[in-house]
Image (cartoon, rainbow, N blue to C red; front, top):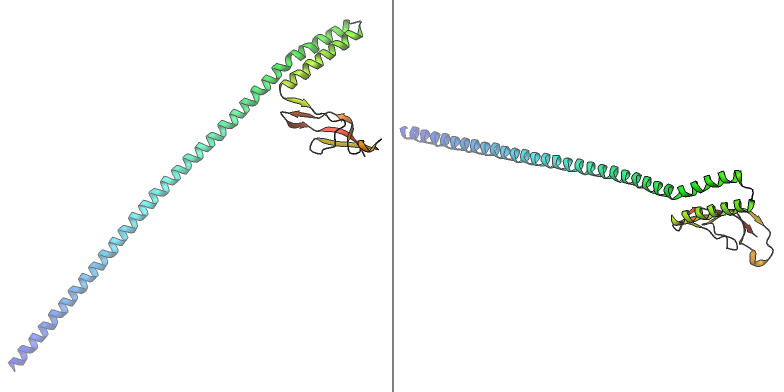
Length: 194
């Protein structure tokens, strides 16, 4: 019986040892799982930190680009305004001599007795004014006898044509049209034959 007891004791101790071993293994596994979770959590936190830094960096870049573009927009707007002022000043400076001539003509017409010289003076001023404008790129449209073109002309009236050749062509001008550097500045108001 003692042998049985000893065997029982051995069996119990081996069972308890096995139980202790399996419990130790479970603890090790649990600890490993906890360590794994902790490592995964740390990796995820690191990734989140990296992504937050990237977001900050991209936001900073975005703000800098936006500011740079806004500054560019303001600068170009100011340059356009400045250029407009320069062009306006240049054009007005070109027209000042014509204004002076008109003032002289007005003062001389009060004392003038010869109509022919007044007409001649007005024609000189007109030609000077026309030349000044043509220096800036203004060019008069030639319309009479041309075929009506809606891109250049505005029909104000139609009259019966005297011949087949006149049909669809411009026969009279109500208001001249002008080009500025080969772009239509003002459409010619015309009368066409039908």
